[in-house]
Image (tube, rainbow, N blue to C red; front, side, top):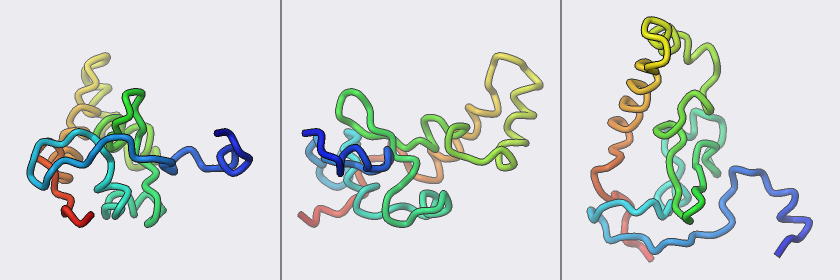
Length: 120
């Protein structure tokens, strides 16, 4: 379906959930329900408390946090200065970017299992 509403939809809005949400505490499958149901405080800091600007839709129907997968894409340049300076110390290794990904992964609890309530 390719209506004019779809054509005007901002790229960051999620049109459909394609994967079933795992039970709470089971391994994450990237369904995206948690991020769609409630934007985390990091997503809110990106400027929208209704639709996370950093929620990435993958080709396999799963979703990922852009702050974990590709933080340089979602943060403003002044927020990246320190991390890019670390990158410059060892060109090509992306040490700063990898550390920033780890910071966001740890803060969000990514990889620790589903933390979204089983409310539906």
